[in-house]
Image 1 (cartoon, one colour):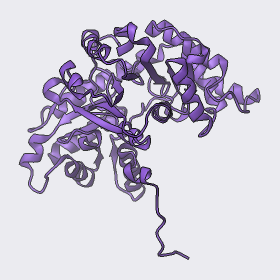
Image 2 (cartoon, helix red, strand yellow; image 1 turned 90 degrees about the horizontal axis):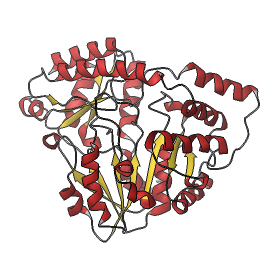
Image 3 (cartoon, helix red, strand yellow; image 1 turned 90 degrees about the vertical axis):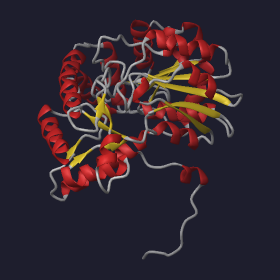
Length: 397
């Protein structure tokens, strides 16, 4: 029997909203179950299967009975695989108490915010941003400070913008390249220039979100802030995971490396929330990091082909402007011209709703990423789906 009484919820939970990208995916699934022929371009996960050797390692772990608790921050062998990966691919050296594994990259950042931030602290987040950054910052009682960069500056903030945003209350700077949602990459020179600003403000901790490190669609080599500025080692946390590069989104393994004191505090937060990541998924992630990496080449070749098709198709639509993707698997298109010319459409959210209802294609409005006037399309789906989706979008617009 329902009650009319409302339950008073916490202030912190009322400050945040559910993930818009997950909401779009859930709505598309609901409409599909109702018989609608929805093509979903909202989800940020590769459509490729997890490589067989990784799955086989997980099956073997089950057969071996590796189904018990592990250390909170991951098995020693997984942590060693993370240490080896950071040294081999990023040129950064850590010891075991400087790394940890979590239940996905999302939990890594959540742990960081809970371990580091207090009420009154400010966190600088370049926009367009991954949808969860500001909300996780607010869940830690801190204040997101959004620094916006539009398509005119290739979605990359300048050193001058970063300098202007830093105050005595700035505690953390979050940086993501290749970017979700824009798919742009910062060059080493651009990162060196940002590092020069951060060097002048030693109170600012740096978090690099490198989850798309292996999804490279251009000739630009991967580089993050720490790789470009090795002297910032003592105040940088590198965050990563196996979800995107190894097509392991559902396995939920993320990891981080950074100052031992901060990693220890993140481990403490994790010990009182999820405890250890799934034991079997840890074995799979260890196999992914240590094993054959050739799968990525095949996957990236497919993403490159899709990237060219989607961007070229979008740019034929009047009022749409889209840059080629350099990394990750998103097209982030400016649709301000479309909004201006379509009657009854006043913003990107209404445009996304129209595309879902009339074209039966699910995209995510730019407002979800702190960038009104854009839409994000994931091309992590088959070329057949993309061809059908772009035909529908073109006809609708």
